[in-house]
Amino acid sequence: MANEFVETTLVDGFADGPHITEKQVGLANQGLYGPDDYVLSSGRKSEAQVLTNNSIRIFDAVYVIQGRRDVIAANDYTDVGIDNGAQGMNRNDIIVRRYTKDNSSEIEKTEYAVIKGTPTSGTASDPSVPTGDIRGGALLHNMKLYRVKLNGLNIVAVEPLFKVLLDMSTINKDLSELQLYHDKKTLTPTDLGLNTGIWKAIVNNSYKIGNTIHLNMEIYTTSIIVANNVYNNAFTIPSQYRPLIDTAVNVTASDGAYKNPVACTSLAKSNGNLFFCIPKATNNYLFIDAEWECA
Image 1 (cartoon, rainbow, N blue to C red):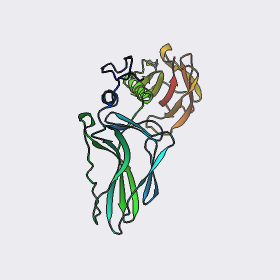
Image 2: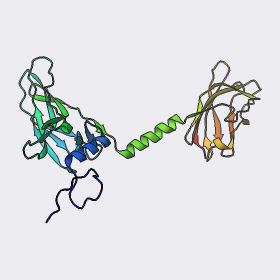
Image 3: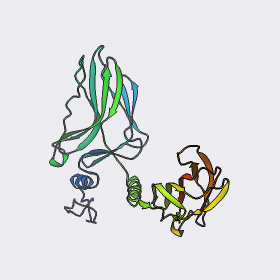
Image 4: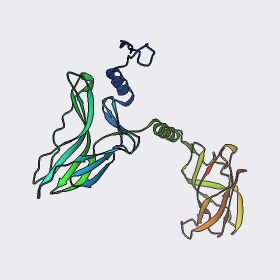
């Protein structure tokens, strides 16, 4: 003989009998997911496919309807019927996931339904979609899924109207990336070890995010440039910003009028030395762009 129902507020505790109600679970889910209607990031997320001008296929989904979880099995689908359009007329229909509750038995159910709009020769408007407060005991509530736009006899658009909630792993990843962005540290030429006794920085947009160094700088020197000479005295990168491995650097050299640009050979080495070779003696302005991982 089954144990009698136990009245308790401790949903997740042992009560020596059935003790969890749909109201308790619904309220708890509202606290987790929010009070509105959502599709969770699982499976095909209520994807819609137009089969004909009278049929739209809705694929599997996990709906949360004001806290009531409604799960359509993976790879399952339902074909929803759309009434014929009329030549020369426009119409908007709304596909909904409908929640109902029997007032006497208190049995709750869900199903797909279509709320048909009013045909018009002008711009179609959406039909009224009845909603209710399930928490407050509503017997009917419609979760909007799609707006189906008909032009004449043809379905010309199926527009989603629902919100998709991200899963926790995606949220954590996004928050981690956002945190890295907020942890962005601007790096000065001195931070990156520019030899300011010989080279001067005109423009600097260098920074560190996480373990990644972004070097973006324009420098110049008034010293005499020897063509095809290897200059290894421009940067001595401090140990905390040095690349883990030798990394190629993009360097372009120009003259003082920003003309006659040439590409330079350049490398940021793991020992902190950033060197470059300038092909032309008249090109004493350098434009440096590089990215590397540091320890």
